[in-house]
Length: 228
Ligand SMILES: Cc1cc2nc3c(=O)[nH]c(=O)nc-3n(C[C@H](O)[C@H](O)[C@H](O)COP(=O)(O)OP(=O)(O)OC[C@H]3O[C@@H](n4cnc5c(N)ncnc54)[C@H](O)[C@@H]3O)c2cc1C
Image (cartoon, rainbow, N blue to C red; front, side, top):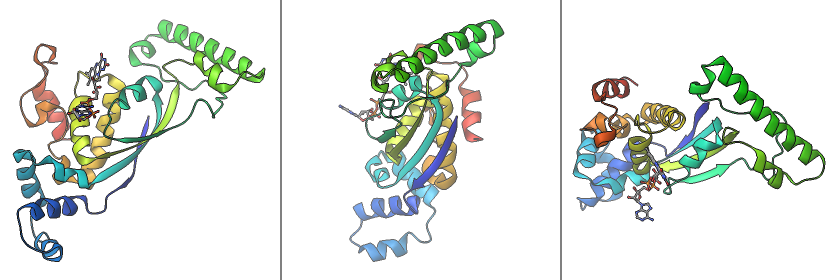
């Protein structure tokens, strides 16, 4: 899996701080720009997030490129509706070689790994045979597995990212989307620490939200995300 931060709103923390200050001030935009120059964004934005004034976070967006992930994972990703996506098409792109993700629970066992690889190669083999004999790729792709690799570009604003990280960095999320979300968080936090320093599963900023489904390791998870 490769996750790249392709682009983001310039000066995301400054933009959000101006938006938040504007709500409570009669100053002009120029004056507000001057006023946020010396402030601690971390302290100010921390207060704003705690108050639940989250709409101001929507003014800063982040665009990620993700490749080498399975269709099983992008299917989960695109359930997040407050986002924009562009995904490699299985209708227009003909796949040449088997390119797939092997879950560790299968890959760590040589026997399972072998059987899994054989089944996938059979699917891809028939896929290629059909395509080579004139079946449109959009129909032949019905043979391709959930494990098939894909590429996707995703853009989310900071408010949606915080929500996404809360759900998908949690141990309850599936391992592959969790890995992807955690890499996205690491990249976003580097560029906007004031927005993302407490981001991650619910237990990073407060109590675990998962009730009976808790992983039971909030201390360990909290430490992991603080040190990310
Ligand atoms: C651990 C886990 C297990 C899951 N298991 C399943 C499963 O078994 N089956 C399944 O189908 N899905 C499952 N999901 C997917 C889940 O139900 C959501 O579809 C997905 O996480 C997207 O989250 P969301 O709807 O909160 O967020 P987004 O689409 O990212 O939206 C963000 C927020 O905007 C608001 N919002 C967005 N659209 C609407 C709307 N139309 N109406 C009202 N408010 C809206 C909500 O407050 C929402 O939380 C699972 C998710 C997780 C994390």
